[in-house]
Image: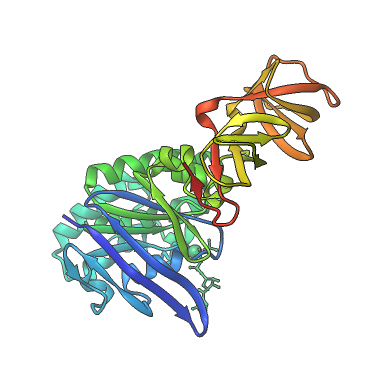
Length: 346
Ligand SMILES: Nc1ncnc2c1ncn2[C@@H]1O[C@H](COP(=O)(O)OP(=O)(O)OP(=O)(O)O)[C@@H](O)[C@H]1O
Ligand SMILES: [Mg+2]
């Protein structure tokens, strides 16, 4: 049982505030992904949980025990670092068993754990090799195996797949998910890759400028972004935004069309995902600017009332730049944001 509670954590680096008001509870055995752009504070937050960095204010609790005054090795945590820190002059076996040896574990138990974790990560045939002779992908597997060998309550991973090529990344992603589910470990996993986040996470915490903007399941973050930043950050191509002017109670004017919307005072941002737009006789009047056939879909960029809007349409359609079309949004997929607070409006 390892629940992690991060309570009101802030971090200041000599005047620069890297983290603000972080409040997050990660349930026992949950797979939590921290997702955000470079510099948003992901590694800093992970290092605070690990005990490699101290929070300026706030508390970290693991398993109902306050740990922020404990050294890293007393927290029941194993960490896979962003640059995977594998010792090149040690063999794969010695690397995976390194932490266990430090704990003075008996040789036969070290051997059992090393072999088990090496086999989980499909590197059992490399155990005698020096880690300096391995490819980046193999070294990354060693780093993950080393963390798993500790049989930690909590595993923290900082971009553990970042040095792999696209295919290996995909393969390792699936393996990691299976391995961690089997090991009943609570995991915090850092990435700036939204596809990786969506595919691995039980919940995603979307970070922006040192804050958690939303923490929810992948589908919730995708369908119901809590803020404009999340809407624009998750999804490729990103969500489209149009300005909506108030046009009477619950009515809004969007690109010259009157649509139903929330009972709020305007203006608001009207938001719709590219795949939630359809070619139609009615809807938003659009002028085609760019047509990109992507095989499975046709990605079309249009001008709608002076704003560039992307639609992901049926690949069989024949459209060309200059065509005047209408794009009909799937009504239940439209979202609204307040441009002042940038928060979602129901
Ligand atoms: N030791 C430090 N001293 C001063 N500033 C720091 C220190 N460590 C991190 N920062 C700053 O804090 C912010 C957050 O850094 P952090 O490494 O947590 O970002 P990140 O989200 O992990 O980014 P990336 O995706 O590039 O790894 C950055 O602006 C960084 O420059
Ligand atoms: Mg980082």
